[in-house]
Image (cartoon, rainbow, N blue to C red; front, side, top):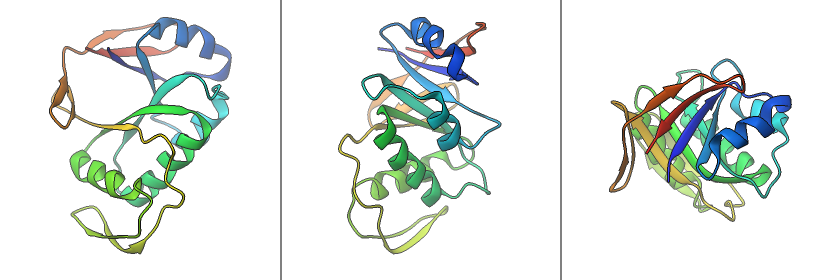
Amino acid sequence: MALIRLTNVSAPSLGAALTVAGRDIPCFYFPDADPATAFGALGINSDVRCGIWLRTDPQYPAAVMARDVKTLCALAKLTDVVVEGEQAAAYVEVLEVMLRGDEVNFHSDVATLVAATNHPAPTRRPTLWCAANGQLRCASTVLRSPQWRRHPEGNELRFN
């Protein structure tokens, strides 16, 4: 299995982008747009396995990222979420606790949550990946060897 980051895919080029991904999992990345809005605008069929690639930002709190991921899980068959940027691992921790659906009391470098909820929990919890140093990490799994290619449908970064 490979995860493929597809950058700035638009609704008209979605079919071609999914063809580029083939059997691998496309993770959509929108560096210049609100990820939930841009992803929703693609109109992805809920049967399509896909992921979202998110970037940490001081203006994008981890708790808001968790809310967006929950929303995207309702819109599509979101199998994977990749978080990159400063303190990506801390953001992933917040996503892990917020996607359980329980009331959360949690403190980290990027969030303090007191009696926080994110109901209902997604029926399909996505795999959460942390991107750093040219690798994607999830628990004991590491995907490496990023390969960059440019396509008319959007730029591609593939991790195997």
